[in-house]
Every structure is written in structure tokens, then in C-alpha cells.
Length: 274
Image (cartoon, rainbow, N blue to C red; front, side, top):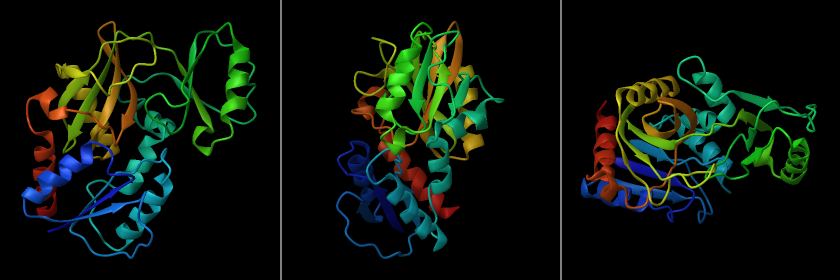
């Protein structure tokens, strides 16, 4: 088996451990690190895992490179098009809004009255992004803040256009990791402020039936084998927030009590045989 990993940088903590486990299975492994590569010639592989991150420096390069390999009939863990499309928050919400609870979302177009008053507090965020990048809370009583935000952020293609969402004063933020289109485990973290993120200091969270069901529906609708879904938990309900394809979780195996990288590696191997 010839396996290829496409990545922005091997500095991310998920990838080195994954490569280590895949090599233990006697898999011929190659890595394209887009932060260092200078030339590229398409080749044939049995399976490709593309860590496409459109919000990073080489995000679109990784997509076009992956599409080139897909045209050459290479098999991917997940379709490059699906990965890119559903990291676009608006497309993701539109896909899922009639299937599971979703935060009310609208697109802020160029002709929008950016100084308008909101009836309630809103969250403004770019179509692509992670870890709270360019995410701001706009009070219903402070429309001028939205005007300032848009003027400040409009210099980056990653932050335009913007989406506007209802602000959810959630009790917990929960992340569900999926593999083979099924939820494997969930994580949460202690809430310190409204811009909460799950990275360090996370802990395992119980996967109840409602969370399992919503995650399975999302994975099947997106047709993705691996990734993560973030949900707000409030008043006994889970509200979908966003999809992450390339989330990195330090010490993940210690948190969940098993070798997740090994589980992923074996799944990839079985995927080739299908």
C-alpha cells in the first residue's frame, strides 16, 4: 500500500503520531508538506489523506493539488471538494439546518447596511476560520462596532464575506470526533468566556443518544469519514456550531484512554480494501 499525507505543516500534533502508527502497519508512506515543498509531480497512491485548511497560508494550494491527484484517479479518505465546501460555514449550515438544530445564520452581503441595529446580540465571523479567528460579539446596542469590525477585517480574503449568527449563551461547548461516519468520542472544556475553544485542557464528555444521532446525521450528510463537530449545549439541547476537519488535540490518547491514532490508521488500511 502506498499512502500519502498532504499537510500544511508537520508541526501540527495529530500528524506525526498518525504517521508513526501507519508505518507500524508496514505501509509505504509519503508526505507532502506544503510549507516546504518546491515542486510537485502527480503520482498514483492507494490512499490519500489531505489535511485541507482553507484558512491557512497554503489552504487553496492544498485543495488544487488534491484535486489534481483526484483527477488522476487517486482514492482519498474524504473528497477534497467536501472537505473544502463544509469548512465554509455558510454551506455547512445550509446543508444541515433542516436536519439538526443549527444557530440562526445569515450572510452579510456587500450592500448590507453595516450600521444596522440588531434586535439581539449577534456573532460575526468569516466563512473560513478556526480557534475564534476574526470572531466578534456585537451587542444589539452597539451597531457602530459592526461597522468598525467590517472596515478592520475587510483586508483579508479569508474574512469576507461574513456571516452573522444569533449569540448563544451556552453552558458547554462539546466536540464530537467522527471516524467512518460515526461518532467515536466527545470532548468538552470548562467555559471561561463566550469565545470558548476546545484545544488544551479538554476532557472526555459522555456521548448521549441525542449527541450521537446529530453527529451521525451530520457525518452522513457531509459524506465525510473523519472530522469533528462542535455543538453548543444549552437547556438540555445541542445546537450545531461548526465543522472542523483538521482539529489538533494535544494528548488526545491520554484523554480518551485508547490509541486514537492507531484506530485511524487501521481504518485507513481497511478503506483501501473496499
